Length: 300
Ligand SMILES: *[C@@H]1O[C@H](CO)[C@@H](O)[C@H](O)[C@H]1NC(C)=O
Ligand SMILES: *[C@@H]1O[C@H](CO)[C@@H](O)[C@H](O)[C@H]1NC(C)=O
Ligand SMILES: *[C@@H]1O[C@H](CO)[C@@H](O)[C@H](O)[C@H]1NC(C)=O
Image 1 (cartoon, rainbow, N blue to C red):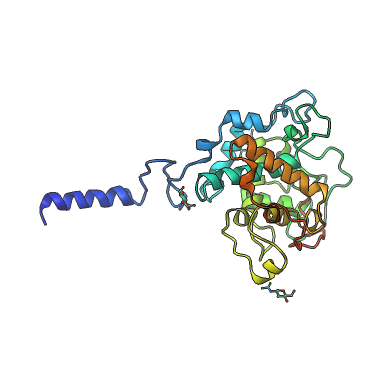
Image 2: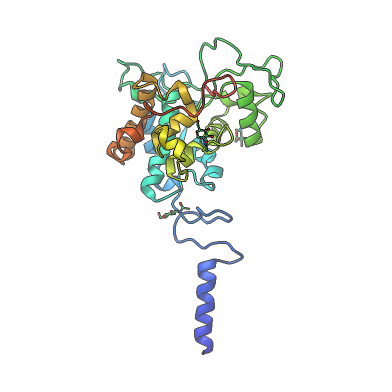
């Protein structure tokens, strides 16, 4: 083999494998230690104007969290989760669908839209950053995550976090002291989005999948799941996040409200709601809930 040919082969090996194991990307972002490196990132298909379109009423004077939520905090929060597959899994269509699905949950959880609201009820996502009139302090004595005296664990954030043990679990996941300072989630939009993404990316109970895995198709239903009508897709993300509060109860409003936000965002993102798939994938009306409701299983 001639020296020149050998040199060309060595050069190709370096280009493909990168220097020191770091992939050289022709698109996406360069990073290490992630199979998602080199794929498109969220900012490649979701930009400031799209965020503004999705949450067009959030800074209106009557919005309860006016001035709090912004695109920058969403993107900053997503950085660590994009390396784990959030919004970076599959091709561009799946990536856009996942961001729409996640934001559909967020928009529905934080909406103050109602039937006659200007712009329609779906334009009012990110109106709140915490529960307005908590009926209790959501403290359940727990050995792992005991309540801090004086702290209130009512719903806060982008996917509302309730209860001391959920603040404790998510705080541990984010290395943020949410158990002692649950109020951080209504003071810092980046942290609020990180908490919601952590919740999306992680199962809250062992032996359950994450909403992310269910949505992008990493999760393979067992025979029991199939019998329980739990299919990969958006419907099962509601089952993971809300269990029997939302699923297995027929065509109830809380479920349809989350679905409507997802469809609205798919349209605004330019994906189109027809990409959401058939109703049995989109809804969870007939699914058996993963979790029977109990104080230790509910996040909301
Ligand atoms: C990266 O993107 C490609 C093409 O868009 C896709 O086929 C692949 O599954 C993605 N990688 C991962 C790990 O999802
Ligand atoms: C908000 O949270 C982010 C991410 O957790 C952190 O980096 C930032 O310092 C926080 N900002 C303030 C003002 O505490
Ligand atoms: C499937 O369901 C049956 C009956 O509810 C249960 O006994 C069994 O442990 C389940 N299997 C798995 C793998 O979850």
